[in-house]
Length: 83
Image (tube, rainbow, N blue to C red):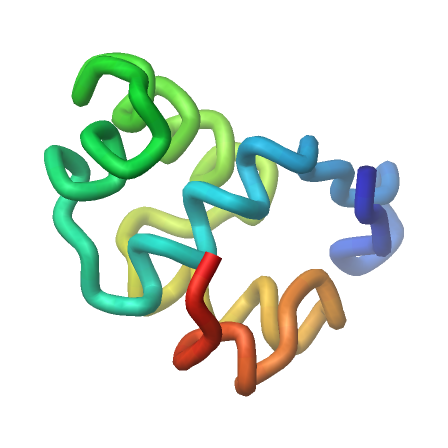
């Protein structure tokens, strides 16, 4: 798991699967495309996204990308990397 802090709160901890989902969605894939690639349901992807948004304290993919990048959870290069 990757972790870092948001302000003075507890560290942000994203699971490996959450990082995988986040990397794919910020790379431009839809929830359905991510689901197909990871062999899970769209509902599972949406569940992971909801957890990611909650942990990062954001409300959309762009905010999640910016927050995760600023926290060092992902690098800018991750956006273009294939998973």
